[in-house]
Image (tube, rainbow, N blue to C red):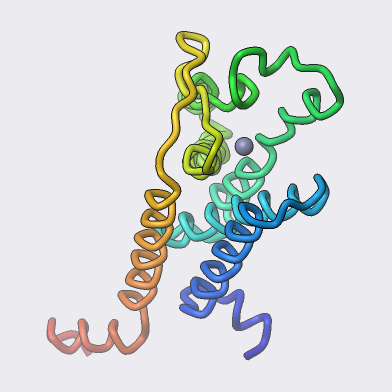
Length: 196
Ligand SMILES: [Zn+2]
């Protein structure tokens, strides 16, 4: 199996590799009390793999306009942790994560997508990537997201098992989408509908 084939559209192995990497990174991030560079790499790898799985489930090519923006946004949002790591806590006073980890960011990106037609696909991709990111952060054990900031600083969270269940569901949908597009399936569908 070459890397080229692995990257190819509609390859179920790609879904399984992404799923394995996501689960491994997610597990290691929660259990290995690593220093920041390694912990950050594990955390962002899990975010990236989850966004990629979501894109495949939605039949969005990873290299397309929506796909690229989603993948970038799924990790880039964590840049908002940098001021806090450097000792400047003005972006996260009273909340478990910086204020930009909230529905307000999703609302702003949605409004930008409505207003900016030329970049609508990229902004929709960013919306997907951010949503995937916030969902995983919500499922991080012992942490949370102040989703309703600035209306409320309450830390919202979901059980980690809910996040894992969503990962399994997204992977199943991605595999089903691929099976639905496979040449054998298309031939069967064409025969049953009388098309040669
Ligand atoms: Zn985050």
